[in-house]
Amino acid sequence: FDPQKVTVVYILGGPGSGKGTQSANLVRDYGLVHLSAGDLLRQEQDTKGSEYGQLIKDHIKNGTIVPMEITVKLLENAMRSNLDSNSTGKFLIDGFPRKMDQAIFFEQSVCPSKCTIFLDCPEDVMRERLLNRGKTSGRSDDNEESIVKRFRTFLETSMPVVDHFAAENKVVRVPAVGTVESVYEGVVEGLAEKGI
Ligand code: UP5
Ligand code: MG
Image (cartoon, protein in one colour):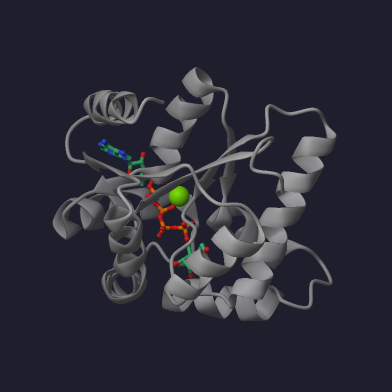
C-alpha cells in the first residue's frame, strides 16, 4: 500500500485492556476504519470450508499466535476491499502485530505505521473484565485457563513489539484503568501530543 494514501495506526494492549472498546470511540471521532485481527480470525474460523478453521480455533483457545501469513492475508484483504469502496484509507489495526516477526514483515511489506496506541492495564483488572465478559461473550478464550495463557503470550511475545515501537518514539501509552470515558480522554490527549 502507498503510505501517501494509506495511514495505519495500531492499537495494542493485553487481553481485555479495552482495545475493541476504545476503537469504537476512535472510529467515531477520527474517521478511522477499524480492523480487529482477532475478529477477522474468528470470522475466518467460522467460515465454512476454510482450510484454516481448526488451526485458528486451536490457537485462540490456547492463547497462542496464529501463523502470520494467515493474519496478514486477512488484514490485507480487508484493507484492499475497504479501499475499493472509497474509504478514507485511515486504518486502526486492533490487536496486531503481536509478535516481532509480524511487526517487521507488516512494516516492510504492507505499510509502515504512523503510531501505536498502547493501552497499559494491570492483569487483575483485565482478568476481571474478561471473566465478566465471558458470562455472555461465547468466546472460547474467555475462561480462567485460556486467560492465563493469553497473559503469558502477551508478556513474552507481544510486549517486545510495543517496546520496539517505543524505541522509535511511535507509542502513545495510555493507562487503561478507570471508566471507558476517562481512558478515552487519555487516548485523545496522547494522540494530540503526537500531532494526531
Ligand atoms: N471494558 C473495556 N474497557 C473497560 C473499562 N474502561 N472499564 C470497564 N470495563 C471495560 O474489553 C474487554 C471487556 O472489558 C469488555 O467486556 C468491555 O466492555 C470491558 P475489550 O474492549 O473487548 O478489550 P480487548 O482489549 O479488545 O480484549 P480482547 O479480549 O479482544 O483482547 P485479545 O487481545 O485477547 O483478543 P483478540 O481478539 O485481539 O485476539 C484473540 C486471539 O486471536 C489471540 O489470543 C490470538 O490467539 C489470536 N490472534 C492472533 O493469533 N494474531 C493476531 O494478530 C490477533 C489475534
Ligand atoms: Mg478485542
